Length: 632
Image (cartoon, rainbow, N blue to C red; front, side):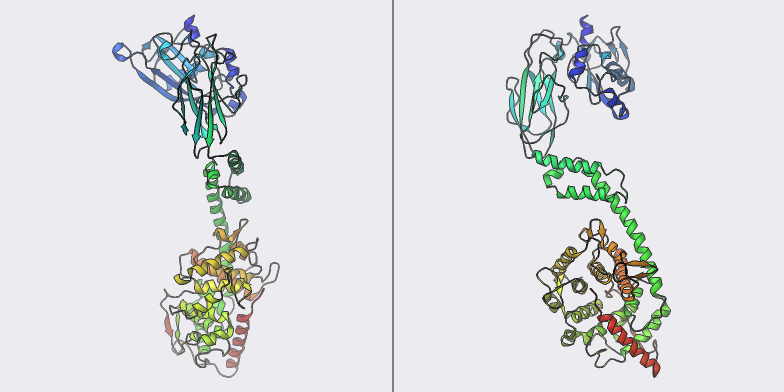
């Protein structure tokens, strides 16, 4: 009769355990496990034991029809251990060790037979620990005292933090100091394991089932209390006449309740992500934004931050594929469209773009090089235009894009004029910008750097008139100064200003301005499709350019507008600059790594005469007008 009581638990205990309903278990049967330990620490081998110590310690899956006894049997079978059951539902023999065996459920000697604890009635739940122990003295040698009334704890350990004093069974109040953790588990051990031990947070309620199992992770913040009771008379036990003992751990933590609430809110946003697709991009970005707003302590409390990290990476991968597809379509179609017209003076930006994109045919290259040679020979004192130094700068860049040295082009040095600061100053900062681009692009010294830096405002923007912040001028200044270590701070400041002026649609109000920013960023080694500074609400600078694309290789100046040749050329320069950046090529106006060669008379032709000469001058006038046009 005593042996039967030794391995059992009362029905009342089922209610007291706060068990998981069978229906809830059924929803997650495959993931539910319990730990089973079988051990002999009382009889040594030299005293005749077949084995001693821990025989098995393993996780066993729960089944819908499992009970406490079958779970142990399953564990022994899975580990290849033999056993024999007694007539009253316990163990007579385990792995050739005969004698008395007792079971604890979560460190408590139960009051009903083991088979009374089932998954169906909630007596066995996921996370339980069942310990089968060999006894020589009806349990007194393994912590069971049938007549005892002492409800003290013999030990109390915590998973984290520091107690203010060493644990003593007679001392019932402690301070537990935690740092950087929001969960702690406690392992209270009853002196007499016939008495249950239950742990509560903040409110001790022995009549309720709102307790924590031994070893459960308990979420705590500064000011919380963990209250551990042992042996309440209302709890199931084989003993009687005891008075409960209550221990209190006062939590001192660097984590507050507000911090935990904030972290939990972000965890919920992350849980809502599910499968990452472009369609649920906002779900991912909302969760990421909320996470980034947390302070360092709060971020540490987000338990599924790794899920967010994976989601952000996946979304980035999907968006890159989308950007690549959109870019490739615009890039290829626009190159094809621009290649339809014959090359001529006045089409420098188109020629530069096609050449730097690797889309310029040899025939078109030869035709434009010839036209450029004729134009170069019209220079007076090295100047292609008395008032516009940008003519020299632009044609120098065009020559270099074709692979020719602008200082030796059909007998003309087109860079001599742009070294003249008095000449470039006629066009203000625009003259200095393009002079610097033309000079540094072929490895010559940029003589206008100081003038450009003087034009930078306190905000980081650059200005045409010294007062008004200007997106186009700022972008072109970045292009002119990028790559020079001495101007790195100025460039960085200008980049941040441009970021602050980007619209929610990813653009800068019109196609040309948006294109100039993309050229600037690419020249500075910044990816305008991926850099977070140039993504607003998930919309990138590349998306901003795409918003002006009409299809069939043409862009509009404004959204909803009609095809515009200047917009198309500038957009293609931007696409080309991005193409070169993402393919690890030099910047669009950087020719220092190219082997530039002189353009000689043998490669060109004699200057046109008569009507042909007149046509060249008309084209030149058109080119000058286009170059100076600046839209807002």
